[in-house]
Length: 489
Image 1 (cartoon, rainbow, N blue to C red):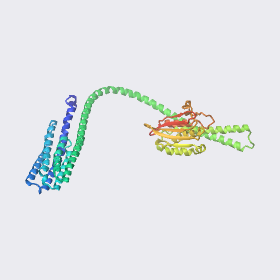
Image 2: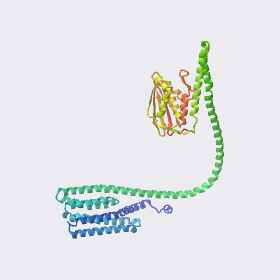
Image 3: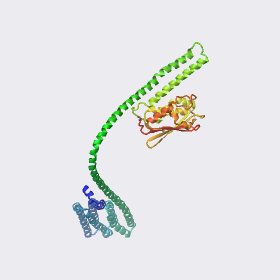
Image 4: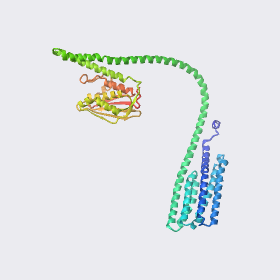
Protein backbone atom coordinates (compact mmCIF):
# COMPACT_ATOMS: atom_id res chain seq x y z
CA UNK A 1 0.00 0.00 0.00
CA UNK A 2 2.85 2.42 0.87
CA UNK A 3 4.40 1.84 -2.56
CA UNK A 4 1.07 2.43 -4.32
CA UNK A 5 0.42 5.61 -2.38
CA UNK A 6 3.90 7.06 -2.74
CA UNK A 7 4.08 6.35 -6.51
CA UNK A 8 0.76 8.15 -7.16
CA UNK A 9 -1.23 5.15 -8.51
CA UNK A 10 -3.97 5.52 -5.94
CA UNK A 11 -6.96 7.83 -6.49
CA UNK A 12 -9.11 7.90 -3.33
CA UNK A 13 -11.99 9.81 -4.97
CA UNK A 14 -12.36 7.54 -8.01
CA UNK A 15 -11.89 4.38 -5.98
CA UNK A 16 -14.40 5.60 -3.42
CA UNK A 17 -17.10 6.19 -6.09
CA UNK A 18 -16.61 2.73 -7.64
CA UNK A 19 -16.61 1.12 -4.20
CA UNK A 20 -19.90 2.91 -3.38
CA UNK A 21 -21.54 1.26 -6.45
CA UNK A 22 -20.18 -2.07 -5.28
CA UNK A 23 -21.68 -1.48 -1.84
CA UNK A 24 -25.11 -0.80 -3.38
CA UNK A 25 -24.91 -4.02 -5.42
CA UNK A 26 -23.76 -6.04 -2.41
CA UNK A 27 -26.58 -4.70 -0.25
CA UNK A 28 -29.23 -5.50 -2.89
CA UNK A 29 -27.95 -9.04 -3.37
CA UNK A 30 -27.37 -9.63 0.33
CA UNK A 31 -31.02 -9.10 1.26
CA UNK A 32 -32.41 -10.31 -2.07
CA UNK A 33 -32.41 -14.02 -1.23
CA UNK A 34 -34.79 -13.38 1.66
CA UNK A 35 -37.14 -11.37 -0.54
CA UNK A 36 -37.14 -14.17 -3.13
CA UNK A 37 -38.13 -16.73 -0.50
CA UNK A 38 -40.90 -14.47 0.83
CA UNK A 39 -42.16 -13.75 -2.71
CA UNK A 40 -42.24 -17.46 -3.54
CA UNK A 41 -44.18 -18.20 -0.36
CA UNK A 42 -46.60 -15.27 -0.92
CA UNK A 43 -47.28 -16.09 -4.59
CA UNK A 44 -47.88 -19.77 -3.83
CA UNK A 45 -50.17 -18.90 -0.95
CA UNK A 46 -52.12 -16.41 -3.06
CA UNK A 47 -52.54 -18.97 -5.85
CA UNK A 48 -53.58 -21.71 -3.40
CA UNK A 49 -56.20 -19.52 -1.69
CA UNK A 50 -57.66 -18.34 -5.03
CA UNK A 51 -57.59 -21.63 -6.96
CA UNK A 52 -61.29 -22.44 -6.40
CA UNK A 53 -62.52 -19.06 -7.68
CA UNK A 54 -60.13 -18.32 -10.56
CA UNK A 55 -59.55 -19.92 -13.98
CA UNK A 56 -57.14 -22.73 -13.17
CA UNK A 57 -55.22 -22.65 -16.46
CA UNK A 58 -54.55 -18.91 -16.34
CA UNK A 59 -53.75 -19.04 -12.60
CA UNK A 60 -51.35 -21.96 -13.11
CA UNK A 61 -49.62 -20.08 -15.93
CA UNK A 62 -49.25 -17.02 -13.70
CA UNK A 63 -47.85 -19.09 -10.86
CA UNK A 64 -45.40 -20.93 -13.12
CA UNK A 65 -44.11 -17.67 -14.61
CA UNK A 66 -43.75 -16.14 -11.14
CA UNK A 67 -41.97 -19.24 -9.84
CA UNK A 68 -39.61 -19.27 -12.85
CA UNK A 69 -38.74 -15.59 -12.37
CA UNK A 70 -38.14 -16.10 -8.66
CA UNK A 71 -35.97 -19.19 -9.23
CA UNK A 72 -33.89 -17.29 -11.79
CA UNK A 73 -33.53 -14.43 -9.32
CA UNK A 74 -32.41 -16.90 -6.65
CA UNK A 75 -29.79 -18.39 -8.98
CA UNK A 76 -28.62 -14.90 -9.92
CA UNK A 77 -28.25 -13.99 -6.26
CA UNK A 78 -26.45 -17.27 -5.49
CA UNK A 79 -23.87 -16.82 -8.27
CA UNK A 80 -23.36 -13.14 -7.53
CA UNK A 81 -20.59 -13.79 -5.00
CA UNK A 82 -18.62 -15.84 -7.53
CA UNK A 83 -19.35 -13.58 -10.50
CA UNK A 84 -18.32 -10.14 -9.27
CA UNK A 85 -14.69 -9.39 -8.51
CA UNK A 86 -13.83 -6.10 -10.19
CA UNK A 87 -15.44 -2.79 -9.23
CA UNK A 88 -16.30 -1.88 -12.87
CA UNK A 89 -18.96 -4.68 -13.02
CA UNK A 90 -21.02 -3.23 -10.14
CA UNK A 91 -23.32 -1.20 -12.41
CA UNK A 92 -23.99 -4.27 -14.55
CA UNK A 93 -24.84 -6.32 -11.46
CA UNK A 94 -27.30 -3.65 -10.33
CA UNK A 95 -28.99 -3.71 -13.76
CA UNK A 96 -29.22 -7.51 -13.69
CA UNK A 97 -30.78 -7.41 -10.22
CA UNK A 98 -33.18 -4.68 -11.35
CA UNK A 99 -34.38 -6.72 -14.35
CA UNK A 100 -35.33 -9.58 -12.03
CA UNK A 101 -37.14 -7.24 -9.63
CA UNK A 102 -39.09 -5.50 -12.40
CA UNK A 103 -40.06 -8.86 -13.96
CA UNK A 104 -41.42 -10.06 -10.63
CA UNK A 105 -43.19 -6.71 -10.08
CA UNK A 106 -44.91 -6.95 -13.50
CA UNK A 107 -46.18 -10.43 -12.67
CA UNK A 108 -47.42 -9.19 -9.28
CA UNK A 109 -49.22 -6.30 -11.04
CA UNK A 110 -50.75 -8.76 -13.57
CA UNK A 111 -52.53 -10.74 -10.84
CA UNK A 112 -55.15 -8.11 -9.89
CA UNK A 113 -55.55 -7.03 -13.53
CA UNK A 114 -56.33 -10.59 -14.59
CA UNK A 115 -58.16 -11.99 -11.57
CA UNK A 116 -59.57 -9.25 -9.35
CA UNK A 117 -63.02 -9.30 -11.01
CA UNK A 118 -63.33 -13.04 -10.37
CA UNK A 119 -62.71 -12.75 -6.61
CA UNK A 120 -65.22 -11.99 -3.89
CA UNK A 121 -64.76 -9.11 -1.45
CA UNK A 122 -62.69 -11.19 0.98
CA UNK A 123 -60.44 -12.46 -1.80
CA UNK A 124 -59.92 -8.93 -3.10
CA UNK A 125 -59.01 -7.67 0.35
CA UNK A 126 -56.64 -10.63 0.86
CA UNK A 127 -54.98 -9.88 -2.48
CA UNK A 128 -54.53 -6.22 -1.51
CA UNK A 129 -53.05 -7.25 1.84
CA UNK A 130 -50.55 -9.60 0.18
CA UNK A 131 -49.43 -7.00 -2.34
CA UNK A 132 -49.12 -4.28 0.31
CA UNK A 133 -47.16 -6.68 2.52
CA UNK A 134 -44.75 -7.34 -0.35
CA UNK A 135 -44.35 -3.58 -0.85
CA UNK A 136 -43.73 -3.02 2.87
CA UNK A 137 -40.96 -5.60 2.89
CA UNK A 138 -39.39 -4.23 -0.27
CA UNK A 139 -38.85 -0.78 1.29
CA UNK A 140 -35.95 -2.18 3.31
CA UNK A 141 -34.66 -4.72 0.75
CA UNK A 142 -34.64 -2.27 -2.18
CA UNK A 143 -33.63 0.79 -0.11
CA UNK A 144 -30.11 0.94 -1.66
CA UNK A 145 -31.73 1.72 -5.07
CA UNK A 146 -34.52 4.29 -4.88
CA UNK A 147 -35.55 3.72 -8.50
CA UNK A 148 -36.09 -0.01 -7.98
CA UNK A 149 -38.01 0.67 -4.76
CA UNK A 150 -40.25 3.22 -6.51
CA UNK A 151 -40.88 0.96 -9.53
CA UNK A 152 -41.68 -2.11 -7.40
CA UNK A 153 -44.03 -0.10 -5.19
CA UNK A 154 -45.80 1.45 -8.19
CA UNK A 155 -46.31 -1.90 -10.01
CA UNK A 156 -47.75 -3.63 -6.94
CA UNK A 157 -49.94 -0.85 -5.50
CA UNK A 158 -51.13 1.47 -8.26
CA UNK A 159 -52.85 -1.04 -10.66
CA UNK A 160 -54.87 -2.72 -7.93
CA UNK A 161 -55.72 0.67 -6.34
CA UNK A 162 -57.01 2.02 -9.67
CA UNK A 163 -59.00 -1.16 -10.31
CA UNK A 164 -60.60 -0.93 -6.85
CA UNK A 165 -61.71 2.65 -7.61
CA UNK A 166 -63.57 1.47 -10.74
CA UNK A 167 -65.34 -1.35 -8.93
CA UNK A 168 -68.81 -0.81 -7.52
CA UNK A 169 -69.30 -0.48 -3.79
CA UNK A 170 -68.02 1.86 -1.10
CA UNK A 171 -65.74 -0.81 0.34
CA UNK A 172 -63.89 -1.13 -2.99
CA UNK A 173 -63.51 2.62 -3.37
CA UNK A 174 -62.26 2.82 0.21
CA UNK A 175 -59.67 0.12 -0.55
CA UNK A 176 -58.61 2.06 -3.66
CA UNK A 177 -58.11 5.29 -1.73
CA UNK A 178 -56.33 3.36 1.02
CA UNK A 179 -54.01 1.89 -1.62
CA UNK A 180 -53.06 5.36 -2.90
CA UNK A 181 -52.42 6.52 0.66
CA UNK A 182 -50.29 3.43 1.30
CA UNK A 183 -48.36 4.14 -1.92
CA UNK A 184 -47.59 7.66 -0.70
CA UNK A 185 -46.44 6.38 2.70
CA UNK A 186 -44.18 3.80 1.07
CA UNK A 187 -42.64 6.52 -1.14
CA UNK A 188 -41.74 8.57 1.90
CA UNK A 189 -40.44 5.50 3.76
CA UNK A 190 -38.31 4.39 0.80
CA UNK A 191 -36.85 7.87 0.51
CA UNK A 192 -35.91 7.91 4.19
CA UNK A 193 -34.44 4.38 4.06
CA UNK A 194 -32.53 5.18 0.85
CA UNK A 195 -31.07 8.36 2.33
CA UNK A 196 -30.00 6.54 5.51
CA UNK A 197 -28.28 3.74 3.59
CA UNK A 198 -26.54 6.08 1.14
CA UNK A 199 -25.36 8.26 4.02
CA UNK A 200 -23.91 5.22 5.75
CA UNK A 201 -22.18 4.14 2.52
CA UNK A 202 -20.85 7.66 2.00
CA UNK A 203 -19.59 7.80 5.55
CA UNK A 204 -17.96 4.40 5.22
CA UNK A 205 -16.15 5.40 2.06
CA UNK A 206 -15.10 8.71 3.56
CA UNK A 207 -13.63 6.81 6.47
CA UNK A 208 -11.77 4.57 4.05
CA UNK A 209 -10.38 7.61 2.27
CA UNK A 210 -9.29 9.01 5.61
CA UNK A 211 -7.71 5.67 6.45
CA UNK A 212 -5.76 5.79 3.20
CA UNK A 213 -4.64 9.32 4.03
CA UNK A 214 -3.54 8.12 7.43
CA UNK A 215 -1.62 5.26 5.83
CA UNK A 216 0.05 7.74 3.52
CA UNK A 217 0.97 9.88 6.51
CA UNK A 218 2.29 6.78 8.27
CA UNK A 219 4.47 5.94 5.26
CA UNK A 220 5.90 9.44 5.24
CA UNK A 221 6.35 9.22 8.98
CA UNK A 222 8.24 5.96 8.63
CA UNK A 223 10.62 7.65 6.20
CA UNK A 224 11.20 10.58 8.53
CA UNK A 225 11.65 8.21 11.47
CA UNK A 226 14.54 6.58 9.66
CA UNK A 227 16.19 9.98 9.37
CA UNK A 228 15.41 10.77 12.98
CA UNK A 229 17.11 7.58 14.16
CA UNK A 230 20.34 8.81 12.64
CA UNK A 231 20.11 12.17 14.38
CA UNK A 232 19.03 10.51 17.64
CA UNK A 233 22.26 8.57 17.82
CA UNK A 234 24.25 11.80 17.82
CA UNK A 235 21.91 13.26 20.40
CA UNK A 236 22.33 10.31 22.76
CA UNK A 237 25.87 11.30 23.59
CA UNK A 238 24.82 14.88 24.33
CA UNK A 239 21.89 13.62 26.43
CA UNK A 240 24.15 11.37 28.46
CA UNK A 241 26.42 14.28 29.23
CA UNK A 242 23.49 16.50 30.10
CA UNK A 243 21.98 13.73 32.25
CA UNK A 244 25.14 13.53 34.30
CA UNK A 245 24.98 17.28 34.88
CA UNK A 246 21.31 17.08 35.84
CA UNK A 247 21.95 14.24 38.29
CA UNK A 248 24.58 16.33 40.03
CA UNK A 249 22.20 19.28 40.08
CA UNK A 250 19.35 17.12 41.42
CA UNK A 251 21.55 15.81 44.21
CA UNK A 252 22.39 19.37 45.19
CA UNK A 253 18.68 20.30 45.13
CA UNK A 254 17.76 17.25 47.20
CA UNK A 255 20.34 18.23 49.78
CA UNK A 256 18.97 21.77 49.82
CA UNK A 257 15.37 20.45 50.08
CA UNK A 258 16.31 18.28 53.06
CA UNK A 259 17.94 21.23 54.77
CA UNK A 260 14.89 23.39 54.05
CA UNK A 261 12.52 20.71 55.34
CA UNK A 262 14.59 20.36 58.49
CA UNK A 263 14.52 24.13 59.00
CA UNK A 264 10.75 24.24 58.47
CA UNK A 265 10.24 21.39 60.92
CA UNK A 266 12.36 23.21 63.49
CA UNK A 267 10.38 26.42 62.90
CA UNK A 268 7.08 24.58 63.23
CA UNK A 269 8.20 22.89 66.44
CA UNK A 270 9.30 26.24 67.78
CA UNK A 271 5.92 27.79 66.97
CA UNK A 272 4.03 24.98 68.66
CA UNK A 273 6.36 24.98 71.65
CA UNK A 274 6.15 28.73 72.01
CA UNK A 275 2.37 28.70 71.72
CA UNK A 276 1.91 25.85 74.19
CA UNK A 277 4.73 26.39 76.70
CA UNK A 278 4.24 30.15 77.07
CA UNK A 279 0.55 29.81 77.85
CA UNK A 280 1.26 28.20 81.25
CA UNK A 281 3.34 31.11 82.68
CA UNK A 282 0.77 33.57 81.34
CA UNK A 283 -1.99 31.60 82.97
CA UNK A 284 -0.05 31.74 86.25
CA UNK A 285 0.41 35.53 85.94
CA UNK A 286 -3.32 35.98 85.36
CA UNK A 287 -4.31 33.66 88.18
CA UNK A 288 -1.98 35.16 90.80
CA UNK A 289 -2.94 38.68 89.76
CA UNK A 290 -6.57 37.82 90.42
CA UNK A 291 -5.62 36.20 93.75
CA UNK A 292 -3.68 39.31 94.69
CA UNK A 293 -6.72 41.47 94.00
CA UNK A 294 -9.19 39.23 95.83
CA UNK A 295 -7.01 37.94 98.67
CA UNK A 296 -4.85 40.89 99.66
CA UNK A 297 -5.44 41.79 103.37
CA UNK A 298 -6.12 45.46 102.73
CA UNK A 299 -7.69 47.09 99.71
CA UNK A 300 -5.20 48.08 97.02
CA UNK A 301 -4.88 51.74 96.33
CA UNK A 302 -5.76 53.16 92.93
CA UNK A 303 -2.27 53.00 91.36
CA UNK A 304 -1.65 49.41 92.46
CA UNK A 305 -5.08 48.39 91.19
CA UNK A 306 -4.41 49.99 87.79
CA UNK A 307 -1.05 48.20 87.56
CA UNK A 308 -2.66 44.86 88.34
CA UNK A 309 -5.36 45.52 85.72
CA UNK A 310 -2.64 46.25 83.15
CA UNK A 311 -0.85 43.03 84.12
CA UNK A 312 -4.07 40.99 83.83
CA UNK A 313 -5.09 42.54 80.49
CA UNK A 314 -1.58 42.16 79.10
CA UNK A 315 -1.46 38.50 80.10
CA UNK A 316 -4.86 37.87 78.53
CA UNK A 317 -3.81 39.65 75.35
CA UNK A 318 -0.56 37.69 75.22
CA UNK A 319 -2.51 34.43 75.68
CA UNK A 320 -4.90 35.40 72.84
CA UNK A 321 -1.91 36.19 70.63
CA UNK A 322 -0.36 32.81 71.38
CA UNK A 323 -3.64 31.01 70.66
CA UNK A 324 -3.97 32.80 67.30
CA UNK A 325 -0.31 32.15 66.57
CA UNK A 326 -0.94 28.46 67.21
CA UNK A 327 -3.96 28.55 64.84
CA UNK A 328 -1.82 30.26 62.21
CA UNK A 329 0.85 27.56 62.54
CA UNK A 330 -1.77 24.79 62.36
CA UNK A 331 -3.21 26.33 59.17
CA UNK A 332 0.15 25.67 57.51
CA UNK A 333 0.86 22.25 59.05
CA UNK A 334 -0.23 18.67 58.34
CA UNK A 335 0.16 19.07 54.57
CA UNK A 336 0.38 15.33 54.17
CA UNK A 337 -2.99 14.72 55.83
CA UNK A 338 -5.60 13.28 53.47
CA UNK A 339 -8.57 15.43 52.48
CA UNK A 340 -12.18 14.41 53.06
CA UNK A 341 -15.42 15.31 51.33
CA UNK A 342 -17.08 18.00 53.48
CA UNK A 343 -20.55 19.52 53.49
CA UNK A 344 -19.92 23.24 54.01
CA UNK A 345 -23.53 23.71 55.14
CA UNK A 346 -22.86 21.44 58.14
CA UNK A 347 -19.58 23.26 58.86
CA UNK A 348 -21.41 26.59 58.76
CA UNK A 349 -23.95 25.26 61.27
CA UNK A 350 -21.09 24.33 63.63
CA UNK A 351 -19.54 27.79 63.23
CA UNK A 352 -22.85 29.48 64.08
CA UNK A 353 -23.11 27.27 67.17
CA UNK A 354 -19.58 28.31 68.24
CA UNK A 355 -20.48 31.99 67.77
CA UNK A 356 -23.92 31.68 69.37
CA UNK A 357 -23.13 34.02 72.28
CA UNK A 358 -21.79 36.76 69.99
CA UNK A 359 -24.73 36.30 67.63
CA UNK A 360 -27.29 36.54 70.43
CA UNK A 361 -25.63 39.55 72.12
CA UNK A 362 -25.46 41.52 68.84
CA UNK A 363 -28.82 40.27 67.46
CA UNK A 364 -26.92 39.25 64.34
CA UNK A 365 -28.70 37.59 61.39
CA UNK A 366 -26.70 34.99 59.43
CA UNK A 367 -28.21 34.12 56.03
CA UNK A 368 -26.67 31.45 53.83
CA UNK A 369 -27.41 30.20 50.35
CA UNK A 370 -26.87 26.44 49.70
CA UNK A 371 -23.13 25.73 49.87
CA UNK A 372 -21.36 22.95 47.93
CA UNK A 373 -19.51 19.86 49.06
CA UNK A 374 -15.75 20.11 48.56
CA UNK A 375 -12.67 18.15 49.54
CA UNK A 376 -10.48 19.50 52.33
CA UNK A 377 -9.90 19.44 56.09
CA UNK A 378 -12.73 20.44 58.40
CA UNK A 379 -10.51 22.37 60.83
CA UNK A 380 -9.31 24.70 58.07
CA UNK A 381 -12.80 25.69 56.91
CA UNK A 382 -14.04 26.01 60.49
CA UNK A 383 -11.26 28.59 61.05
CA UNK A 384 -11.99 30.29 57.73
CA UNK A 385 -15.74 30.82 58.20
CA UNK A 386 -15.50 31.47 61.96
CA UNK A 387 -12.97 34.28 61.49
CA UNK A 388 -14.89 35.91 58.62
CA UNK A 389 -18.29 35.72 60.35
CA UNK A 390 -16.78 36.71 63.70
CA UNK A 391 -15.23 39.82 62.13
CA UNK A 392 -18.55 40.70 60.48
CA UNK A 393 -20.24 40.59 63.90
CA UNK A 394 -17.39 42.37 65.73
CA UNK A 395 -17.03 45.30 63.29
CA UNK A 396 -20.74 46.03 62.87
CA UNK A 397 -22.19 49.48 62.36
CA UNK A 398 -25.16 51.15 64.00
CA UNK A 399 -27.59 48.49 62.75
CA UNK A 400 -27.66 44.90 63.94
CA UNK A 401 -25.15 42.77 62.02
CA UNK A 402 -26.49 41.02 58.93
CA UNK A 403 -24.23 38.51 57.17
CA UNK A 404 -24.96 36.88 53.77
CA UNK A 405 -22.90 33.85 52.68
CA UNK A 406 -23.08 32.63 49.07
CA UNK A 407 -21.16 30.46 46.60
CA UNK A 408 -21.03 30.22 42.82
CA UNK A 409 -19.16 27.76 40.54
CA UNK A 410 -16.36 28.95 38.27
CA UNK A 411 -14.57 26.95 35.55
CA UNK A 412 -12.51 24.80 37.94
CA UNK A 413 -13.17 26.41 41.33
CA UNK A 414 -15.80 27.81 43.70
CA UNK A 415 -16.13 31.50 44.54
CA UNK A 416 -17.44 32.25 48.04
CA UNK A 417 -18.66 35.60 49.34
CA UNK A 418 -19.19 36.64 52.99
CA UNK A 419 -20.92 40.04 52.88
CA UNK A 420 -21.93 42.18 55.87
CA UNK A 421 -23.49 45.58 56.60
CA UNK A 422 -20.75 46.72 58.97
CA UNK A 423 -18.59 49.84 59.18
CA UNK A 424 -16.60 49.03 56.03
CA UNK A 425 -12.90 49.37 55.17
CA UNK A 426 -11.09 52.11 53.25
CA UNK A 427 -9.59 50.91 49.94
CA UNK A 428 -6.02 51.77 51.02
CA UNK A 429 -6.24 49.13 53.77
CA UNK A 430 -7.64 46.30 51.63
CA UNK A 431 -4.27 44.53 51.37
CA UNK A 432 -2.95 45.67 54.74
CA UNK A 433 -5.57 43.85 56.83
CA UNK A 434 -4.42 40.40 55.65
CA UNK A 435 -0.98 40.82 57.26
CA UNK A 436 0.03 39.13 60.51
CA UNK A 437 -0.96 41.18 63.61
CA UNK A 438 -2.41 43.96 61.39
CA UNK A 439 -5.33 45.83 62.95
CA UNK A 440 -7.13 49.11 62.15
CA UNK A 441 -8.95 49.97 65.37
CA UNK A 442 -6.27 49.71 68.06
CA UNK A 443 -7.63 48.68 71.44
CA UNK A 444 -11.15 50.04 70.86
CA UNK A 445 -12.20 46.66 69.48
CA UNK A 446 -10.73 43.46 70.89
CA UNK A 447 -8.61 41.24 68.67
CA UNK A 448 -5.08 40.15 67.81
CA UNK A 449 -4.93 40.93 64.09
CA UNK A 450 -4.39 37.28 63.19
CA UNK A 451 -7.89 36.30 61.95
CA UNK A 452 -7.60 37.45 58.34
CA UNK A 453 -3.98 36.23 58.16
CA UNK A 454 -5.24 32.77 59.12
CA UNK A 455 -7.99 33.03 56.47
CA UNK A 456 -5.47 33.95 53.79
CA UNK A 457 -3.19 31.08 54.82
CA UNK A 458 -6.07 28.57 54.58
CA UNK A 459 -7.30 29.85 51.19
CA UNK A 460 -3.82 29.89 49.63
CA UNK A 461 -3.30 26.36 50.88
CA UNK A 462 -6.17 25.25 48.61
CA UNK A 463 -4.82 27.09 45.53
CA UNK A 464 -7.18 30.03 46.03
CA UNK A 465 -6.99 33.71 46.81
CA UNK A 466 -8.90 36.03 49.13
CA UNK A 467 -9.71 39.72 48.80
CA UNK A 468 -12.11 42.33 50.14
CA UNK A 469 -14.46 44.75 48.37
CA UNK A 470 -15.51 47.54 50.69
CA UNK A 471 -15.90 51.25 51.33
CA UNK A 472 -16.33 53.05 54.68
CA UNK A 473 -19.95 52.91 55.86
CA UNK A 474 -21.04 50.50 53.11
CA UNK A 475 -20.21 47.17 54.71
CA UNK A 476 -17.59 44.70 53.52
CA UNK A 477 -17.67 41.82 51.06
CA UNK A 478 -14.93 39.24 51.65
CA UNK A 479 -14.47 37.02 48.58
CA UNK A 480 -12.31 33.93 48.26
CA UNK A 481 -11.88 31.09 45.79
CA UNK A 482 -11.25 27.40 46.47
CA UNK A 483 -10.17 25.19 43.58
CA UNK A 484 -12.62 22.35 43.05
CA UNK A 485 -11.23 19.14 44.46
CA UNK A 486 -9.30 20.90 47.23
CA UNK A 487 -5.70 20.08 46.29
CA UNK A 488 -4.37 21.01 49.77
CA UNK A 489 -0.96 21.91 48.29
